[in-house]
Image 1: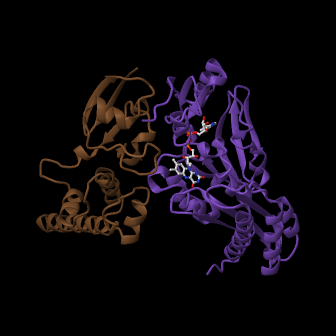
Image 2: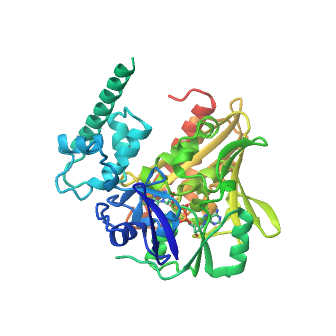
Image 3: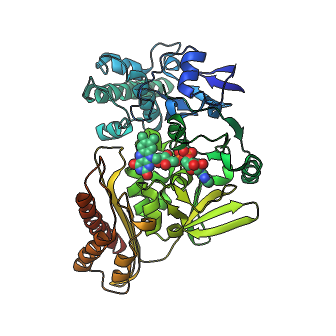
Length: 164
Length: 291
Ligand SMILES: Cc1cc2nc3c(=O)[nH]c(=O)nc-3n(C[C@H](O)[C@H](O)[C@H](O)COP(=O)(O)OP(=O)(O)OC[C@H]3O[C@@H](n4cnc5c(N)ncnc54)[C@H](O)[C@@H]3O)c2cc1C
């Protein structure tokens, strides 16, 4: 059947089988391979993307269920101004080693900061508790998100000062 | 790579439309809500529906509100929304306790209340919580709506009273004064299904137990409830000794099975201990004296 999914702001129309999973639609049809594909059982969280702004495990969503909806993937994080603060935070604080979990981690952390601009370490740990990282022991991921929150806070202060 | 077998896909635009589609496509069609139980089963080819009817657009099934003296929770409410609901915190904290330990935050963005109850997994958490609360399920079919008590909703593992061409619309929990409720779960790791879990709701009349509900999951309790322990408590004083005895009675009547989450005697022990702990916390909440 024909579906149109808006991915990172651009509408994509494709003919797909109803059984195609969103993760494979993104990777194989749209060639957006930043979203990884891991356990296939909605446990590991490497396939997390945002669906209408909410982080979801895309191995357990049908592409047809995303018809007419908005998806944001890791490719949609960086903007004209450069890296998203979450990406910058992961880079600055070594929030990754092998990088396999990183796209999913960043999409969840982006959504967390959008909802809660100043999360505690515990809130960060809870938010990523459905995602597995075998390299960092999570410590550096928490630091990365704190750093991103700090960057965004500083940017807000700057905007306020300019406005004042 | 896990891929479901082929199927057709339809998107329902309303409850009546969903029922019409279920009627048209017959028993080989299935509703899909969050899809977080059904899609994994389809990937493993344990479920092979010929037609999937997507109910994610059904606004009629959303929202949490107080309606006619009851907390009303729409079938399409996601776990994340119930967890964050101030109405649930205020009236039935057992629901918030349970939601906090259901799966993980990303799964909770997708999985729904209705899907959880209809999946009827014997380790499902909300079934035990709603059983403890004496909740009522509202089911709609071609001939209209009917109400079924939560403890008559499940007819066996993965089986409910919802008919082939019916849809669970909402769950209602009557609000009465003097209530306190709590949920206790033991899991191997964050996000996992319960080794065992128990919930309790108490409606106190001074220091007397006016009404009580005990829900148990993952321990082979018929209809997720512990009626013998409830009967023991009802009408008597709400004391620590009696909560301990109620736990003992509950443990005596469960029929757990050994699996990778633990042996039978351990699960039986948990059923009793978690019942007692949930009763203790429910009573403290009813008295407004939670530590
Ligand atoms: C990794 C993981 C961990 C989990 N851990 C837990 C846990 O610890 N505790 C727990 O309780 N659950 C757990 N779950 C299950 C989770 O809560 C599911 O989301 C839930 O069981 C099903 O909800 P759903 O909306 O995804 O249902 P779906 O998968 O869409 O549907 C499930 C079934 O219900 C039917 N159905 C759905 N909605 C309706 C309706 N309104 N009327 C009639 N029939 C309907 C469908 O046809 C299907 O048969 C876990 C799931 C995953 C993936």
